[in-house]
Image 1 (cartoon, rainbow, N blue to C red):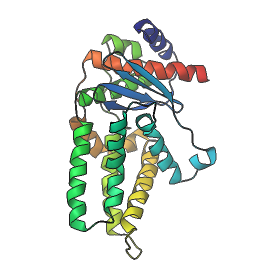
Image 2: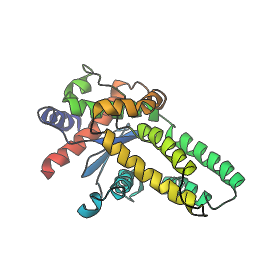
Image 3: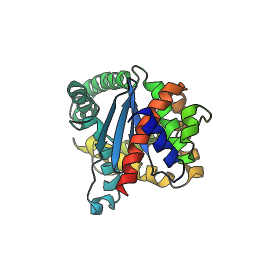
Image 4: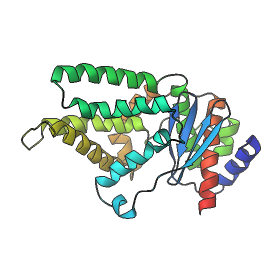
Length: 261
């Protein structure tokens, strides 16, 4: 999309209610997702577009399973062959995600060392380049869509918050105590597979809590307060050109969502 097309789409979106959007920041661009589509806008002016996977309707209604399905779908722009991650990067991410599951079958001391190294490598990957600033731009652009101030945000007249209740940082902050509590008070006899089962159940339960608190902004602000605090570390105040990168991805997704209706 050229700039004129982006501005036309932002103007149209300001006149109507936008679908719920999410996203993720990368080192040189921003991914914005809706229920049906995703778009990646790069700081170099590039734009990639794709469709989000759709789970069976019946599965999306099953408690606990629906959360895991949503979580898997949110990562699809990274792992699809036509997605935003390159081959080696996809391999690295797959290893980083699966490593904690594999480490539950190793000796405790080895698991601690390998887990620490994996976490350090993943954090270094997440925070490289301009990621923190583009993370703030991602939140700002989504807030602009919800507040119908997309054009004003593009021009710099409006500066919606760079903090978001739906940020993955909030989810991670919520997951940690759930996982620790589940591991400590697991009621069944421990086996070699117990850590794996606890990890999966913690993810599923946290997603259910996540969906619950999203229904009330007042409740969300209380429950997700630790995550909002962490966003002061995981986001930085974006420059206007970085916000425009995120808004370009927003315009791409909204254009296709409008055509989908």
